[in-house]
Structure formats: C-alpha cells, structure tokens
Length: 299
View 1 (cartoon, rainbow, N blue to C red):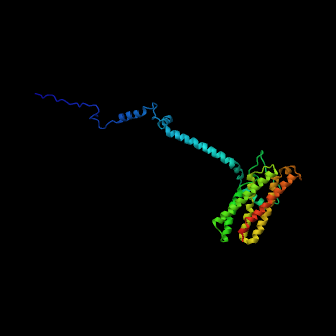
View 2 (view 1 turned 180 degrees about the vertical axis):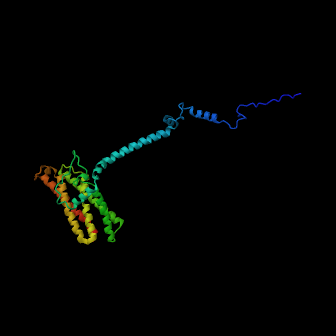
View 3 (view 1 turned 120 degrees about the horizontal axis):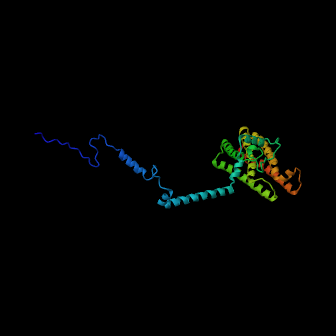
C-alpha cells in the first residue's frame, strides 16, 4: 500500500526576516529610506540649511547684543582717534613732504652744498597746489631733514666713541639738545612772523624742513674732522655754513618777502625792512647752530 504522500514544507517568511533562499541581504531599501529621511525636511532635494541669523540671535541674545555694542564702540573710537590725530598731526600733509625719490634727494643735496649757480628758486604750483617734491627741487621735504638728523646722532656717537667718551646718556643729551634747539628756532620764527604781521604761506612744517637742512653740513663737518682733524672740520663746516646761509636767504626771501618779490621792486618801508632783517637773522642762525652742535665732537 503506498505510503502517504510526502508533504513539502514551505517555509513561511516572517516579517523582518530575510528570504532563506537569498544569499545576501538587500540593504538598498534601507539606504533609500535613510536618504529620503535626510532629504525630506528641505523639500528641494538639498540638505536642510542651518539656522537663520534671527534664530541664532534669539538663541543667545545677550552675547550677540554685547558683540554688536562692542563693534559700534570700536568704530566710534577709531573715528574719534582719526579726527584728533588729523587735527594735531596733519597726516595727509605729511605725506606730501615725504613724496621724494632718489633723483630728488641727489639734486637737493647738491643744491644744499653748492647753491651758488642755481637760478630759479620758485616753487612750482599746479592748480594752486604745490607739486610734490620729487617733481620740484625747490619744494621743501622732511625726508632729508629726518634722515640727516638720525645720521647726525649716529655720527656723533661714532665721534664720541673714537674719543673714548661714548655713553648712552651723552648720546641722548646730544640728540635732545639738537631737537630742543630746532624747537626753539621754530617757535621764535613763528613769534617773529606774528609780530611783524607777515602774510606768507610758510607753514610750521616748512620751517621744520628748512631748518633741518643744516644737519647735512653738520654731518659733513664732523666726518671730515674724524678723517683729517680740525683742519678738515673747519674747512668743510665753513663751506657748508656759507652754503646754507645762501640757501636760506634765497629760499626764505620768496616766502617772507612775498609781496616785494611779486612786485619785483624794492620796497623801503619799515615793515619790509623788518622782514628782511628777519630773513637775515634766520639765515645767520644756521651757521652758529651748526658750529655749536658739532665743535665739541672734534678734537
């Protein structure tokens, strides 16, 4: 009697279980679901954007208000400092006096040492504004006086060192003395111009520039004194003193005696005589200070 027919057991798949006949698990659906979950918030196929600035401000309002207040205070402080600096130190004007180049420096040094053959001493203007010094050798600058002052201090230190008299205090005294005399010169000239009532375009910075040119001759005199003794010092310093005297006379007469120079005639009034005396006094003071600030450096 034939036995009962064998029954095949068909495995029933339960939820969450893989097909027993499948060799590998299919994970693509799970990845797709995760990717859809990532894309869902934006609705445009891109990841969700970060929180807006308004939301960040609402999240921490105290620190953001403090940061904004600090930024506004910093901006106001910078503006206040710029205004005060420009009031006491005209930075924009100082840029004009340092607008030089190598050719200008060479010509200006030659003019300071040998001013006798120079004819045209007028400062060139362009639309009522003087041209930059690099375009006009007659224009005053602060580059040469500043570099000459620094070089003078260094040369003075060298001279003191060769004589075994160098000390930082003595070098500082030398530099401060030169600055003090320059300040006194500027103040005295400004007071004299005020008392004489001179209408001139000569500014304080112009005075500092013109009075600072004497350091060039002082450097030459001290260096020649170190190389050739007192004879070289007196010869070179004497030449430079005469040169700076001629340079100051021909330069300042166009500034202080502007009215008479514009007319081209001699005006023998009392005011013009005072202006001429003032010009001569300023020019004559330069050789005296050149000797006073250097004679003790050469022995």
